[in-house]
Image (cartoon, rainbow, N blue to C red; front, side, top):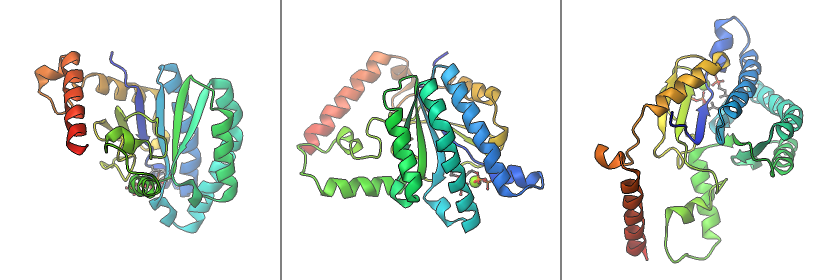
Length: 253
Ligand code: IPE
Ligand code: IPE
Ligand code: MG
């Protein structure tokens, strides 16, 4: 079975999960956190190398204050509880997002988690927190304007200004919660992702659902704009990519 290297998840539906049970929305977030932890376990057991989790978007700041405050409380707790476990399990934590928008103590906890796990290599888990895909592009442009013009404007060069320059493209995107959109998640890295929608609300997402998504991925033929025949031939794909890159570079030089 062909495995994705990087799986991204839009963990949606916590609020509706709770409402359907007559519970306040925050109970859904609490339950969603448990599912998040179990999903990281599953990803490790499957030998996945990169997992990115949409945890809180720039747009989510516009939710009612009590909900935002509760989510911040949950992040605080989760980071404090989770650092030890992350170290023990070989999880390298990375944060993607405009963390300056977060309360100071959470920024510190994010830094601490990244620092203390930076030598781990079992899996890299990217927490997208205070993250917006458009904001990431604007933040990159802001950094670019402070640097000298390069010899050639390439994709690799632009990527080096994103929040996590070494984050690979997302191979498989999973979205739960019966919504069929990407909601401003990892716009750059989703360019050629396979997308799997799971009807369940996030707290109900299980290992079986993860397996179904992985099976879906392995049944896809990724063509990257080529013909089915070309795509069946890995050598052909690499050759095409090299030609496209060198053409683009000579055009922009
Ligand atoms: C996802 O669940 C978690 C966050 C956005 C923080 P929601 O809170 O969006 O749940 P629904 O979509 O309202 O059910
Ligand atoms: C996306 O869910 C953000 C996260 C899962 C953190 P939303 O619930 O915010 O997305 P929309 O508003 O339905 O597009
Ligand atoms: Mg939602």
